[in-house]
Image (cartoon, rainbow, N blue to C red; front, side):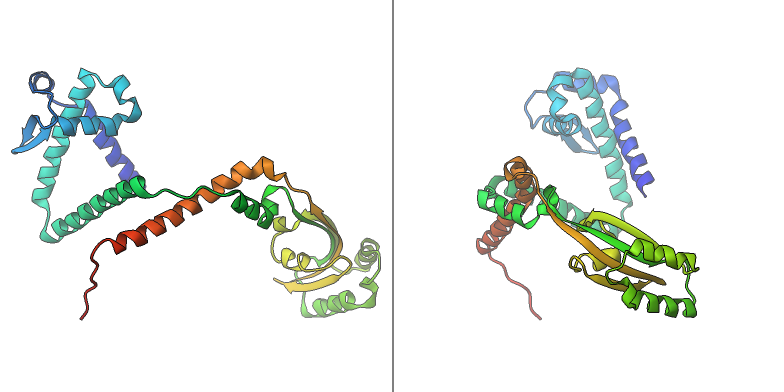
Length: 288
């Protein structure tokens, strides 16, 4: 579908490069400059100078005053003739249901443009306050280099376990040996005895941990041990340290916070404006 849309877009853009040079050039030269002046008619439907200027602005954007010249105007006028011709032919081919759908889409697009105009004219969001910035900073320290970093060590089973192995390892990891012991040395001894276990240690911010490890490390206090059996693997985690990291100063990130909060302020302004608009018109829901 994207390929089709792209191809159609290219085809429409290509219309700007084709047309009847002499007729369009004469129309541009001889027709008065008034916006309502008709430059050409297609099956009796007019294309005015105002329509041409609006298409030039929409096509070229801010660069229109710099690049719009007689040749560019001619090509865009010819593109309007081509597109109007195809539109009229397409309209003749529409079934009644297709025509109805087109009307609905046209009405919806017109309403969208009107709403956009109304919002641009009336929706004035409240400035993001210093208090709101400070509150966001306090609630989300991890976004600004802060947060909590934990040190922990892990004993984990390696490979698939059969029922006998799982029962044996649960017994080992539930025993008194794991409390207060040097886990690295403990696991080295177990591995030497053929137990499928491995030892790891790490130091990471909580939000960087993947599940299910995060669910073990995050709530576990320093010195405490938490077990888990998930996806066929046994895990035993012991948290060995915790540090609250300093974040960037508020003054350094306040601008970024204001940018993040600005859409919320605009959303609130739009919501308030919507409520006001409904109060200013007559709304009647149909009932059966």
